[in-house]
Amino acid sequence: MAVDIAGDANAFLGIEPGAEGDGYVRENGTVEIDLTAMEDGRHGVSKHAVTAVDRLLEVTNNGPTEIAVGFNDEYALEHGDYDEPPGGWGYTVNTDETAVVVGWASPLPAEMDHSLAAVRPRLVTTGFERSTLVDGRLKDEVDSKTERTIRPGDRLNIGVIVDTRASTVTANPIPESLDETISIYAETTTT
Image (cartoon, rainbow, N blue to C red):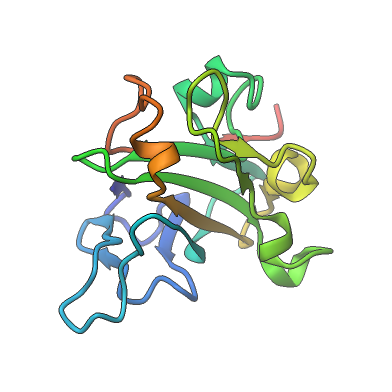
């Protein structure tokens, strides 16, 4: 998965590795996320499991106005996860469709009433057939744009959940609208 960023240090939306991003995130004009196992075996995800990396990226508002940050995901919009972007989460799939990744946005832990584990979207076991993958709309820190609005100079957390369970990637078809990209979306909150 790759996230394009401006090469300018003064970009309005700064994206950098989060506290758990070491080994998963590389920066070289773009922010590249690699969740595969490294040679030293420190990273990667388990087969037939759900793996969470709660603090993968931090997004900083370097602009002059408040912004709401989240995702613009065609599948999530089609299935009513949120009415309009930026939504609290977005989906992507790896190239060989052996893993589904759910990216999610939340305030930094110091600014929340709950832990990251408590607000992390829950994954349902039915995969994609006739349902969304995420069941977490009742968590304000994940769903509400107000909770994902950041003032100039403030930061936001981006985490991922990687699902490699057969019930998700094999038993049910992965929607055609998913590919290897995930879109982080930001909009100003003032007119």
